[in-house]
Image (cartoon, rainbow, N blue to C red; front, side, top):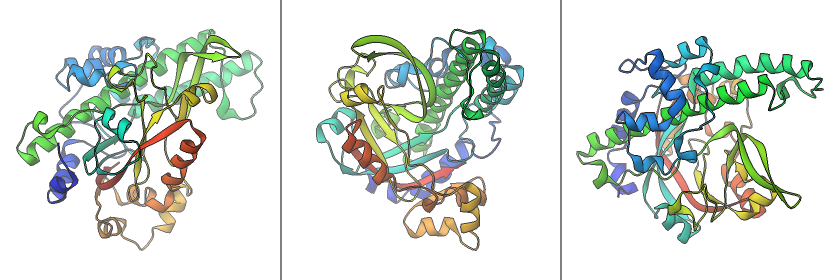
Length: 376
């Protein structure tokens, strides 16, 4: 198992290796992977299972991914040709905006029992990946918004805001959207699984050691910005609901059948990324979340500056140097990305996770402090 001390002296090599091996930035593409239409169709149907079956990871990874890395409701036929075109050579890339691959270490343990269940210990080196369905998912969303605006008018739904456009779940528009969204989610599962594989390859190369000896095991892969059909208790009765987590993440409790067996005593791992200069957190799901928030908690810190405001605030500054002065080595596809993602553009994630911890909808397990990152 790698510790923070193991990686500090090789941090630059690690981050530079990740930057070479994992394309990042707006419109980033892989030159070594070009999927045919039928191959991409299989990705949309099978998700992370497609990646593992093609040599990107192991079956043990699948056990530690939400829904085992595949939404069965996905229908590749519900995805447009334009979305296929945008997604065919972006698999295995980070993308832009707040997406990243971050190297850090466990700086503090709040719940020793849960941390032990998750395989975390004080001083342990970590890697956190934040990315999704890339241009394919964006295209599915963009097209669906237009369809949903028409559907809302068609079904007489009065919208308080155009961004809340919707359609009945069992309508043709509703069913098509859920099928396309699930396909995009499967693309995201595969994307993160492939990036996980290249993270492991990078560490193996830098340390001249095997994945097993380095302890590069997956803790958990959890979704956000997704709608899913789930069973919840409402007014004393178990019913099936469509739970839409926008900027939120699942937080299922100890004993829940959808929590991996290894974690069932502790509850589902919850990953809450912060900004690149302060910290991220690992939490665990709770029974209170099931009672009050349909098994949901926060996903991240949230911005306090728009991207344009952050770029203006960064003028005349070297964000890269500022990060190095904090002991954090960062590589990005552009200076603009670093300006948009500078730490003060975000809320302090410590305050955010303390709120959900005190509310009882997820409990603090560990604090992870960044050492280096690649940004989109």
